[in-house]
Image (spheres, rainbow, N blue to C red):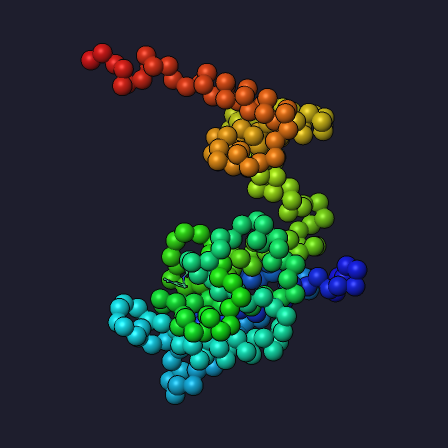
Length: 269
Ligand code: 4G0
Protein backbone atom coordinates (compact mmCIF):
# COMPACT_ATOMS: atom_id res chain seq x y z
CA UNK A 1 0.00 0.00 0.00
CA UNK A 2 1.16 3.55 -0.73
CA UNK A 3 2.11 5.67 2.23
CA UNK A 4 3.05 9.32 2.54
CA UNK A 5 5.08 10.30 5.63
CA UNK A 6 4.16 7.00 7.21
CA UNK A 7 0.42 7.45 6.81
CA UNK A 8 -1.47 5.03 4.61
CA UNK A 9 -3.60 6.82 2.07
CA UNK A 10 -6.20 4.14 1.55
CA UNK A 11 -9.57 5.72 2.29
CA UNK A 12 -11.87 3.28 4.06
CA UNK A 13 -15.59 3.67 3.52
CA UNK A 14 -18.37 1.61 5.08
CA UNK A 15 -21.84 2.06 3.59
CA UNK A 16 -24.93 1.30 5.68
CA UNK A 17 -27.81 0.46 3.37
CA UNK A 18 -30.86 -1.73 2.84
CA UNK A 19 -29.76 -2.24 -0.79
CA UNK A 20 -26.04 -3.14 -1.04
CA UNK A 21 -26.62 -4.67 -4.49
CA UNK A 22 -27.22 -1.18 -5.93
CA UNK A 23 -23.51 -0.37 -5.63
CA UNK A 24 -21.84 -3.24 -7.49
CA UNK A 25 -21.63 -1.74 -10.99
CA UNK A 26 -20.64 1.78 -9.99
CA UNK A 27 -17.91 0.62 -7.60
CA UNK A 28 -16.41 -2.01 -9.93
CA UNK A 29 -16.04 -0.07 -13.17
CA UNK A 30 -13.66 2.62 -14.35
CA UNK A 31 -11.73 4.78 -11.89
CA UNK A 32 -13.52 3.67 -8.71
CA UNK A 33 -12.92 0.01 -9.64
CA UNK A 34 -9.25 0.69 -10.33
CA UNK A 35 -8.84 2.64 -7.08
CA UNK A 36 -10.17 -0.37 -5.16
CA UNK A 37 -7.89 -2.79 -7.06
CA UNK A 38 -4.91 -0.54 -6.28
CA UNK A 39 -5.73 -0.50 -2.59
CA UNK A 40 -6.36 3.25 -2.57
CA UNK A 41 -10.03 2.87 -1.72
CA UNK A 42 -11.62 0.21 0.47
CA UNK A 43 -15.42 0.04 0.32
CA UNK A 44 -17.41 -2.31 2.52
CA UNK A 45 -21.13 -2.61 3.11
CA UNK A 46 -23.23 -3.12 6.19
CA UNK A 47 -26.65 -4.51 5.37
CA UNK A 48 -28.98 -2.74 7.79
CA UNK A 49 -31.69 -5.39 7.35
CA UNK A 50 -29.42 -8.11 8.73
CA UNK A 51 -29.49 -6.25 12.09
CA UNK A 52 -33.27 -6.26 12.34
CA UNK A 53 -34.59 -8.01 15.45
CA UNK A 54 -37.98 -8.64 13.83
CA UNK A 55 -38.75 -12.20 12.75
CA UNK A 56 -39.46 -10.97 9.19
CA UNK A 57 -36.39 -8.69 9.20
CA UNK A 58 -38.49 -5.48 8.93
CA UNK A 59 -36.36 -2.36 8.85
CA UNK A 60 -39.10 0.30 8.69
CA UNK A 61 -42.49 1.18 10.20
CA UNK A 62 -45.31 3.74 10.00
CA UNK A 63 -44.54 7.23 11.32
CA UNK A 64 -45.91 8.20 14.76
CA UNK A 65 -48.41 10.99 14.26
CA UNK A 66 -49.49 9.60 10.92
CA UNK A 67 -48.61 10.68 7.40
CA UNK A 68 -47.45 9.10 4.19
CA UNK A 69 -44.45 6.85 3.77
CA UNK A 70 -42.38 4.75 6.13
CA UNK A 71 -39.61 5.57 8.58
CA UNK A 72 -36.52 3.43 9.04
CA UNK A 73 -36.30 1.80 12.47
CA UNK A 74 -33.73 3.21 14.90
CA UNK A 75 -32.65 -0.17 16.32
CA UNK A 76 -31.24 -1.82 13.16
CA UNK A 77 -29.60 1.47 12.13
CA UNK A 78 -27.94 1.90 15.56
CA UNK A 79 -26.74 -1.71 15.63
CA UNK A 80 -25.45 -1.53 12.04
CA UNK A 81 -23.60 1.67 12.96
CA UNK A 82 -22.06 0.04 16.03
CA UNK A 83 -20.80 -2.84 13.84
CA UNK A 84 -19.37 -0.44 11.24
CA UNK A 85 -17.71 1.61 13.98
CA UNK A 86 -15.98 -1.48 15.28
CA UNK A 87 -14.40 -1.94 11.85
CA UNK A 88 -13.63 1.81 11.46
CA UNK A 89 -13.33 3.37 14.92
CA UNK A 90 -12.09 6.78 13.77
CA UNK A 91 -14.48 7.19 10.85
CA UNK A 92 -16.66 10.25 10.26
CA UNK A 93 -20.34 9.24 10.32
CA UNK A 94 -22.32 10.89 7.53
CA UNK A 95 -26.04 10.73 6.78
CA UNK A 96 -27.01 11.46 3.17
CA UNK A 97 -30.12 13.59 3.23
CA UNK A 98 -31.71 16.70 1.70
CA UNK A 99 -31.28 18.80 4.89
CA UNK A 100 -27.50 18.45 4.88
CA UNK A 101 -24.56 20.69 4.10
CA UNK A 102 -24.19 20.86 0.32
CA UNK A 103 -21.49 18.63 -1.22
CA UNK A 104 -18.89 20.81 -2.98
CA UNK A 105 -15.32 20.39 -4.22
CA UNK A 106 -14.14 21.77 -0.87
CA UNK A 107 -16.20 19.27 1.13
CA UNK A 108 -15.03 16.38 -1.08
CA UNK A 109 -11.39 17.42 -0.71
CA UNK A 110 -11.61 17.52 3.07
CA UNK A 111 -13.49 14.21 3.36
CA UNK A 112 -10.69 12.52 1.37
CA UNK A 113 -8.38 13.31 4.32
CA UNK A 114 -10.56 11.63 6.93
CA UNK A 115 -9.40 8.38 8.51
CA UNK A 116 -12.56 6.69 7.27
CA UNK A 117 -16.16 7.40 6.34
CA UNK A 118 -19.35 5.67 7.38
CA UNK A 119 -22.20 6.59 5.04
CA UNK A 120 -25.77 6.00 6.18
CA UNK A 121 -28.28 5.71 3.34
CA UNK A 122 -31.86 6.45 4.34
CA UNK A 123 -34.89 5.16 2.48
CA UNK A 124 -38.62 5.84 2.55
CA UNK A 125 -39.19 9.12 4.42
CA UNK A 126 -35.86 8.91 6.22
CA UNK A 127 -34.63 7.47 9.50
CA UNK A 128 -36.06 7.70 13.05
CA UNK A 129 -34.57 10.94 14.38
CA UNK A 130 -33.29 9.24 17.56
CA UNK A 131 -30.87 7.13 15.54
CA UNK A 132 -29.58 10.23 13.74
CA UNK A 133 -29.18 12.16 17.00
CA UNK A 134 -27.28 9.29 18.60
CA UNK A 135 -24.91 8.26 15.82
CA UNK A 136 -24.43 10.86 13.06
CA UNK A 137 -21.62 13.44 12.92
CA UNK A 138 -23.00 15.33 9.94
CA UNK A 139 -25.73 15.30 7.27
CA UNK A 140 -24.62 15.97 3.68
CA UNK A 141 -26.84 16.70 0.66
CA UNK A 142 -25.78 16.32 -2.97
CA UNK A 143 -28.32 18.93 -4.13
CA UNK A 144 -31.79 20.37 -3.74
CA UNK A 145 -33.90 17.42 -4.88
CA UNK A 146 -35.33 14.31 -3.27
CA UNK A 147 -34.16 10.83 -4.23
CA UNK A 148 -35.94 7.57 -3.47
CA UNK A 149 -32.99 6.65 -1.26
CA UNK A 150 -29.61 7.87 -0.07
CA UNK A 151 -27.72 5.22 -2.07
CA UNK A 152 -27.20 7.29 -5.22
CA UNK A 153 -26.09 10.22 -3.04
CA UNK A 154 -23.55 7.93 -1.31
CA UNK A 155 -22.22 6.86 -4.72
CA UNK A 156 -21.91 10.49 -5.84
CA UNK A 157 -20.11 11.44 -2.63
CA UNK A 158 -17.73 8.46 -2.87
CA UNK A 159 -16.91 9.29 -6.49
CA UNK A 160 -16.29 12.98 -5.78
CA UNK A 161 -14.14 12.20 -2.71
CA UNK A 162 -12.17 9.42 -4.39
CA UNK A 163 -10.68 11.85 -6.93
CA UNK A 164 -8.81 13.57 -4.09
CA UNK A 165 -7.05 10.40 -2.86
CA UNK A 166 -3.45 10.70 -4.07
CA UNK A 167 -2.84 8.21 -6.92
CA UNK A 168 -6.47 7.69 -7.91
CA UNK A 169 -6.19 9.98 -10.91
CA UNK A 170 -3.18 9.34 -13.13
CA UNK A 171 -0.05 11.35 -12.24
CA UNK A 172 -0.79 13.52 -15.30
CA UNK A 173 -4.29 14.49 -14.24
CA UNK A 174 -4.77 16.51 -11.11
CA UNK A 175 -8.08 17.07 -9.40
CA UNK A 176 -6.95 20.69 -9.04
CA UNK A 177 -6.93 21.26 -12.80
CA UNK A 178 -10.61 20.48 -13.26
CA UNK A 179 -13.62 22.75 -13.35
CA UNK A 180 -14.32 24.60 -10.09
CA UNK A 181 -10.86 24.06 -8.61
CA UNK A 182 -9.76 27.48 -9.79
CA UNK A 183 -13.30 28.78 -9.55
CA UNK A 184 -13.86 28.67 -13.33
CA UNK A 185 -15.42 26.21 -15.76
CA UNK A 186 -13.26 24.01 -17.97
CA UNK A 187 -11.99 25.07 -21.38
CA UNK A 188 -13.16 22.89 -24.33
CA UNK A 189 -11.15 19.78 -25.21
CA UNK A 190 -10.51 18.15 -28.60
CA UNK A 191 -8.92 14.94 -29.84
CA UNK A 192 -8.26 13.30 -33.20
CA UNK A 193 -9.07 13.69 -36.00
CA UNK A 194 -8.03 17.29 -36.71
CA UNK A 195 -11.05 17.69 -38.93
CA UNK A 196 -14.38 15.90 -38.62
CA UNK A 197 -17.34 16.47 -40.96
CA UNK A 198 -16.12 19.95 -41.79
CA UNK A 199 -15.48 20.85 -38.13
CA UNK A 200 -11.87 21.79 -37.39
CA UNK A 201 -9.94 21.72 -34.11
CA UNK A 202 -8.80 25.24 -33.10
CA UNK A 203 -5.46 25.85 -34.84
CA UNK A 204 -3.69 27.07 -31.68
CA UNK A 205 -3.90 23.57 -30.11
CA UNK A 206 -2.04 21.96 -33.02
CA UNK A 207 1.21 23.91 -33.26
CA UNK A 208 2.83 23.04 -29.93
CA UNK A 209 3.25 26.60 -28.59
CA UNK A 210 2.49 25.93 -24.95
CA UNK A 211 2.40 29.55 -23.83
CA UNK A 212 -0.17 30.30 -26.55
CA UNK A 213 -2.16 27.17 -25.68
CA UNK A 214 -2.23 28.12 -22.00
CA UNK A 215 -3.43 31.63 -22.82
CA UNK A 216 -6.12 30.29 -25.18
CA UNK A 217 -7.35 27.84 -22.55
CA UNK A 218 -7.57 30.53 -19.88
CA UNK A 219 -9.56 32.72 -22.24
CA UNK A 220 -11.94 29.85 -23.13
CA UNK A 221 -12.41 29.03 -19.41
CA UNK A 222 -13.35 32.64 -18.82
CA UNK A 223 -15.67 32.57 -21.87
CA UNK A 224 -17.43 29.38 -20.70
CA UNK A 225 -17.84 30.73 -17.17
CA UNK A 226 -19.20 34.05 -18.43
CA UNK A 227 -21.69 32.24 -20.65
CA UNK A 228 -22.86 29.35 -18.44
CA UNK A 229 -22.06 30.28 -14.81
CA UNK A 230 -21.51 34.04 -14.55
CA UNK A 231 -22.29 33.74 -10.81
CA UNK A 232 -18.91 31.97 -10.32
CA UNK A 233 -16.99 35.06 -11.49
CA UNK A 234 -17.85 36.92 -8.28
CA UNK A 235 -15.70 34.56 -6.17
CA UNK A 236 -13.12 33.28 -8.69
CA UNK A 237 -9.55 34.50 -8.17
CA UNK A 238 -9.03 36.72 -11.24
CA UNK A 239 -5.85 38.51 -12.36
CA UNK A 240 -5.94 41.99 -13.93
CA UNK A 241 -5.26 40.22 -17.27
CA UNK A 242 -8.31 37.95 -16.69
CA UNK A 243 -10.48 41.01 -16.04
CA UNK A 244 -9.29 42.61 -19.26
CA UNK A 245 -10.13 39.42 -21.19
CA UNK A 246 -13.59 39.35 -19.59
CA UNK A 247 -14.21 42.92 -20.79
CA UNK A 248 -13.25 41.84 -24.32
CA UNK A 249 -15.53 38.82 -24.12
CA UNK A 250 -18.44 40.93 -22.89
CA UNK A 251 -17.88 43.33 -25.80
CA UNK A 252 -17.77 40.39 -28.24
CA UNK A 253 -20.98 39.08 -26.75
CA UNK A 254 -22.71 42.45 -27.16
CA UNK A 255 -21.53 42.58 -30.80
CA UNK A 256 -23.06 39.17 -31.49
CA UNK A 257 -26.40 40.14 -29.98
CA UNK A 258 -29.11 40.56 -32.63
CA UNK A 259 -29.80 44.25 -33.19
CA UNK A 260 -33.17 45.61 -32.14
CA UNK A 261 -34.35 45.98 -35.76
CA UNK A 262 -33.84 42.22 -36.29
CA UNK A 263 -35.93 41.32 -33.27
CA UNK A 264 -39.49 40.12 -33.92
CA UNK A 265 -40.60 42.28 -30.96
CA UNK A 266 -39.83 45.38 -32.99
CA UNK A 267 -41.38 44.29 -36.31
CA UNK A 268 -43.87 46.82 -37.75
CA UNK A 269 -46.57 44.33 -38.85
C1 4G0 B 1 -33.51 11.47 4.34
C2 4G0 B 1 -30.29 12.39 -0.11
C3 4G0 B 1 -33.08 10.66 3.30
C4 4G0 B 1 -34.73 12.13 4.28
C5 4G0 B 1 -31.18 11.35 0.20
C6 4G0 B 1 -35.11 11.17 2.11
C7 4G0 B 1 -31.95 13.35 -1.51
C8 4G0 B 1 -30.69 13.40 -0.97
C9 4G0 B 1 -33.92 10.50 2.18
C10 4G0 B 1 -35.54 11.98 3.15
C11 4G0 B 1 -32.43 11.37 -0.39
C12 4G0 B 1 -29.77 14.53 -1.31
C13 4G0 B 1 -37.13 13.59 4.09
C14 4G0 B 1 -37.60 12.52 1.93
C15 4G0 B 1 -33.43 9.64 1.06
N1 4G0 B 1 -32.79 12.36 -1.24
N2 4G0 B 1 -30.26 15.60 -1.89
N3 4G0 B 1 -33.37 10.42 -0.16
N4 4G0 B 1 -36.74 12.70 3.06
O1 4G0 B 1 -28.59 14.44 -1.04
